[in-house]
Image (cartoon, rainbow, N blue to C red; front, side, top):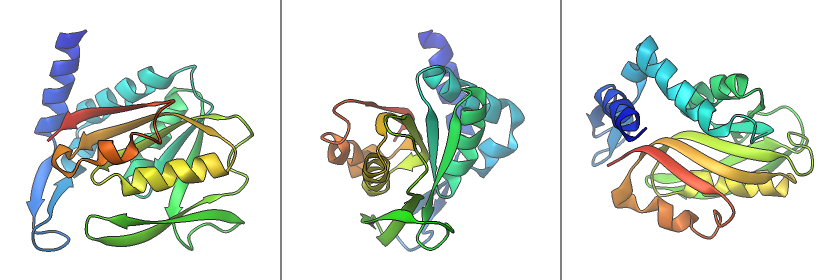
Length: 182
């Protein structure tokens, strides 16, 4: 099992490229486009994520925008519903909103008020965990909507930004798993 996880880690890591000084000077953007373009790597990631949650979750949340790309096929494979968490003003019905700070600015996320049934077990998926603000805001939205976050999975964790520590209290009943930590 450990060998397979290490192989997956190497495959995924080899398909992520660094883009320096984007979106602003000093930021190194982690571009997952090469991973998404590789059908073997993309399928391996989706399969691994779905395996972790199959039969344990009712809904899979994807955080705009790259989280959508990962979470939707995972929800399908896990036979769970998919719920998008979007940037402010993108959802047409009544929403819960949560503002938060990014490593290079601030933003607001929203989710439909009726996206979850009371007690739904939810897996949150995103591409990168940086400072933890986006995931923390998403956990708050899910809980305000009456559901329970039972896990958070990210493709890549920027360990030097210590987002995991920010989420420690929010994840007391759930887990945070990263495929790659840099």
